[in-house]
Length: 270
View (cartoon, rainbow, N blue to C red):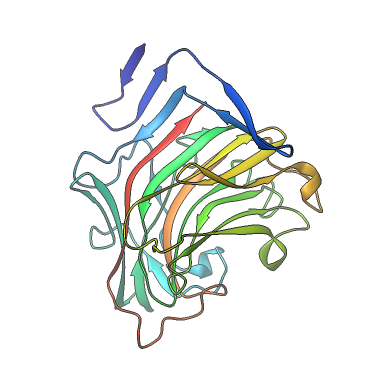
């Protein structure tokens, strides 16, 4: 095995033997275990997120992100910091730059982009009405082919007032927004804000599998979407926690601030 450490950061490239083990949970679903690690961020150096891998989105929905969200995204340590082996994204209720809430959103656009493989993160989620964290991906050609033509893969999307359920979703031309292709996964006798869980996809040219803690709960193929399958290009990753917006609605009197989204690691296998 050859290991390259880039600037003593948490960003590693690994060359190793690729082992594929194929099986099926039923006649319609194919599972492929991928073991060649090509990127990992273990968040083990305190301070700002690794700048070799992550950059920030700064501002509000008026920047073109839509969804009528209420937060202002910042790069302040009050909203995003690496400490104690975790990435911590914190949503706060405060007056800041004309917004009533602050939070953070980071992305790997232009720094690390991936086509196919297994993409996963181990995350402990927050709670409360109006809290909307996500681990997701956008097509790297978004500057040429605007959303939804670029494609969007929501590996994990979560509403804080439904703490037992997460969503895995695809957006593309003809199936975006409220018309997206989505399926939920629910815990039994547990909540996603109680502990860490692993959220991931396995992605090839003709399917995307959605997982929670290695449980395969959905597989989508080109024939499952009503428009073009736009998931055969490279994508970049996003981690964020929104406040309010079209899907979760606004926080209410029972929503407690601050709220934290804790990320133990992000790993990508070829």
